[in-house]
Amino acid sequence: MTKQALIQKTADSIYASRQIVAFSGAGISKESGISTYREPGGLWDRFPEGGSGGMMAVMRNHPEQAPQILLEFLETLQKATPNPGHKALVDLEQMGYLQTIITQNVDNLHISAGSSTVYELHGNFLRLKCLQCERQQKNHPKEYFSMLTQIIRSISSLTMESLFEHLPRCDCGGKQRIDFVGFGESVQQLNQAISASENCNLMLILGTSGVVHPAAMLPVMAKKNGAFLIEINPEKSSLSGYADLFIKGQSGKILPLVVDALKKNKAL
Ligand code: APR
Image 1: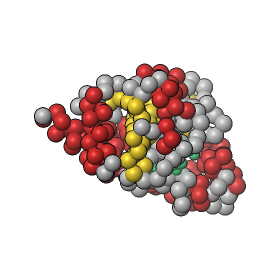
Image 2: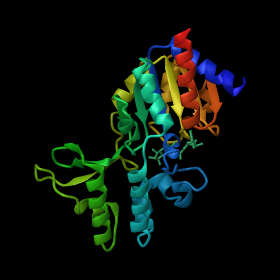
Image 3: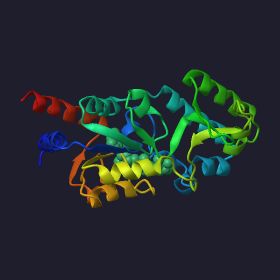
Image 4: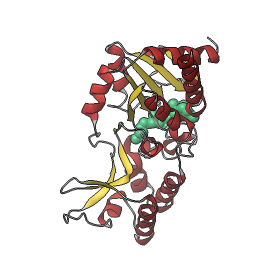
């Protein structure tokens, strides 16, 4: 099928569905300037220990580079804005097609784009969580990033754990941490994500290599419950074998074309 035909088929499938879930990974944020992990030049390509231990392992294994690695990551997060892929998902929600986004990303871009139901399985790097009362609080990005930068620069031997020690206390007096999910920690909102995956009749799989569990099992669960799976990725992934449609391309380019085709459908 030509790309145009695939886009039209995707629009027709969305038009005919009513319970649609988008499942996203780092690829959807690449056009916002945020590095992916496993592609050539990606974070875990540059620091292989991250593939099994995440940023905490990278910082432990490269203590001398830890400040620079983290400051670089924070800078891309701070500069990043939602790209046309994130915005197309907001359009699909506002047109009444898309109910839920399940993301593995910690960059807050789906929320800042305006999506209203976003399950952030791996947490959110722009949010603090209290270890005592579990309050999650998001701060104004400018102040937040400048606070983190100052702390990072003030610590002689920086680890993620030592960074947490320097964070301001919660109003309840409890210690706080950045609210991302480290490797080996429990993912967040998994029950809601499982329920959404089991009850959807169409899942868009956007920009993920599909190798990290339990997130990667969600499209398989959707498929087992009869959902139609459509994947958008410049490359095949571990989930491509489950996809009913595979569109080779960047989500920031393809998704707006799907929205345009839907608008034409609606006009018919
Ligand atoms: N549009 C769509 N997909 C893209 C784009 C793009 N513009 N650019 C790259 N991709 C695809 C790549 O081909 C790859 O399949 O995005 C995928 C990124 O894969 P990973 O880097 O493995 O990222 P992800 O699947 O989100 O990783 C899952 O691993 O380390 C953990 O917590 C981390 O949440 C992350 C999880």
